[in-house]
Amino acid sequence: MERHEYDVVVIGAGGAGLRAAIEARQQGKRTAIVCKSLFGKAHTVMAEGGAAAAMGNVNPNDNWMVHFRDTMRGGKFLNNWRMAELHAKEAPERVWELEAWGALFDRTKDGKISQRNFGGHEYPRLAHVGDRTGLELIRTLQQRVVALQQEDQRLHGDPEAYIKVFPETTITRLLKDGDRIAGAFGYRRQTGEFIVFEAPAVVLATGGIGKSYAVTSNSWEYTGDGHALALLAGAGLINMEFIQFHPTGMVWPPSVRGILVTESVRGDGGVLRNSEGRRFMFDYIPEVFKDKYATTEEEADRWYTDQANNRRPPELLPRDEVARAINAEVKAGRGSEHGGVYLDVSTRLSPEEIKRRLPSMYHQFKELADVDITKQPMEVGPTCHYVMGGVEVDPDTAAASVPGLFAAGEVAGGMHGSNRLGGNSLSDLLVFGCRAGAGAAAYVDKLDKRPKVSEESIEAAKAEALAPLERKTGENPYEVHQELQRTMNDLVGIIRRADEMTEALQAIEKLKERAKNTAPAGGRVYNPSWHLALDLRNMLLVSECIARAALMREESRGGHTRDDFPKMSPEWRRRLLVCTADPDGSNVKIEVKIQPSMRPDLLLLFERSELEKYLTEEELAEYDAAVA
Ligand code: FAD
Image (tube, rainbow, N blue to C red; front, side, top):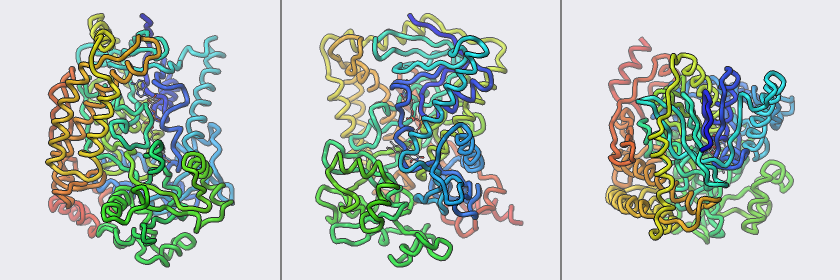
């Protein structure tokens, strides 16, 4: 069996994984980057709108404190405030660093990195490259990896001496020595051969979970592997009930349902209308945001040219609000022909501007739906996009509760609270990718003895991976997957109810049994059916965590809306739900953990009147004490 020894193994080659690997290598650690897809293909590459960083290039009033406030508001104050603080403070530095490594961002007239508007951000804040920002981000990070490899060639005569990529390699188990991480086990997708990494530190950077839902902007890779690997290794997952349904996915034709329509369309002036032609978002401005959003079309339109004297258009409310509003319009019978609403930029920008600012959207609609967005509105509806929940980590080091395990990017939880603001993921993965790489390197430095991988744990991982192929008859993994996707979409979707979630949990129990009996056709060589049979364990585990946590949280907040508990409750804001499971994936449990109070200097960044909407009396007393 192929075996390798490293100091740090990074699972995932999106923005978080690459940034972590670069940091670990820069700290002198022998680092492996393992990814299930081809190198360069990750969700990060699909990111369109940009990376949020308070550089103040377009509006000099922007700074980390405003970004911090926006992020906390977007997450409805459930965010891990230390993560939100680090993120707001360090994002500009991480973006400038990318520029120094060769990233070519769009420019302002005076030559600075241009920044665009996005939902929930008070000022233009997203550093971007047209609507292909993720591509540039990944290109730059890959280029940096190559530069480090060239340095290693010069120094050690081997470009892969300190950093090596293992593409098309899927990790199926983390290996432990006692309570500590000792490595990872996986298979090569092309050959089906097994591979073992021995390493004291593993960084999870595997992204999200969207493939558990039928309508999603996510691609085949997002099967919640990192979430499940962490859970099975004994780490906790937090905030799993919070799933972001992006308000604007394509709805037609059916083959492309769910594919993302970037928020930049609204940031650059696009408006939402129902079948009656009404700009309906004015009807859905929630109480907590009333003073920040325009109440007339005239004011909203003026905002694009004069932001100092006008309030923002309600199309730029945080994503959870817009998604719920679209859902309500469709339910009320005011939807578009194919069950969405209309998003129109053609009446707002010239065709040339649209093609310049939104080139991917122009091509996406032209090629996939035969719609010319310079002349016609788009039909859009909510799509499962992002998971706010993930591995519970220490904010400063990205360390999980299992020694040697680290997590960054979408697989980590806490940073975005109950709802992520657009653009805050690319900056999150740069900030915490860097911190995870540094955290893993520091952990390795402190070890007096390297952990050992036991042969029994390798044999057990091998047996688990081979089990589906050894069954000659059984379930078709694709059918089990489709049923899970339908269950999650219909019963644990955008609007939730206790009876439906209970039904979902019963369905998941049955699907777990069926998944144990899958019999994929074919052998080990490039067999997607076998790969899916293995991924099912992860999707089912993650889905169970989502459904259990969603059933337990009896309030509505951000990406979790309960029909039977429609209000937000200050008591629930303090309660974080932490999922754990046994190493075989059974016995998924949820514990309530109380969110620590925000540091007084951060509390004082807000007006008391705003905090009253979110905090308990006890916490408000802390605010009063800080003021005094
Ligand atoms: P990813 O970039 O997805 O990388 C995950 C990596 O893990 C991949 O290399 C994958 O192959 C690997 N992997 C997974 N499982 C395994 C396994 N078992 N073994 C080995 N490797 C594994 N956010 C923004 O901030 N701004 C935007 O404009 C924006 N636009 C978006 C547009 C789209 C269409 C989508 C889908 C998302 C968008 N997002 C945006 C969200 C953002 O792109 C993602 O949240 C972010 O890129 C996640 O980065 P990551 O590094 O955590 O994971």
